[in-house]
Length: 191
Image 1 (spheres, rainbow, N blue to C red):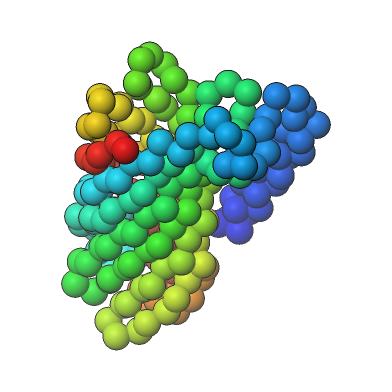
Image 2: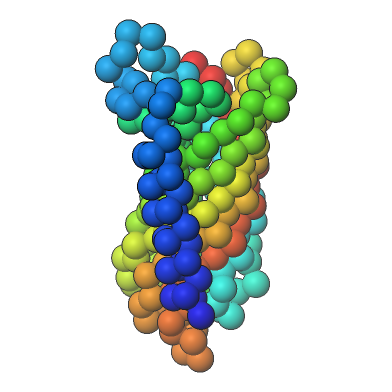
């Protein structure tokens, strides 16, 4: 079932990209090469709850840091694409995860300085389960919201992460890998 969900999500993403390419009027490719490009970077600390699909743990606190900015590769004619690079740690005894992720989100301004968005992500997860180490590829889907008040950044996100199946899950279900749900709050600084 997990493979069918992943195939469906990838097919949907491919169709969305194909439709977007067909209607590329107004989109800016490689905006970082344009003189009016503004990265508008933000650095934030993150903390929240992560719940793995495995039965090793019910979930616990996860924490990390992120750097986000306006995407340097593509920008839509309205709204924007924000790219986030993040590191996240989770340690609940029998399961330890360290994630390094890249997440572009299409964001829409709902009011002055309040944005909501969503998008996919790619990552690498180092997982340790009772002495079994594995490095897993990961794919994520998430939604986010953030508020910018001068230099202050406040935000939140919810995300599901699919990981490459390896023998790091519980003995009863080693194919669960390190798949997980998470909800995080973010506080940071806008440059």
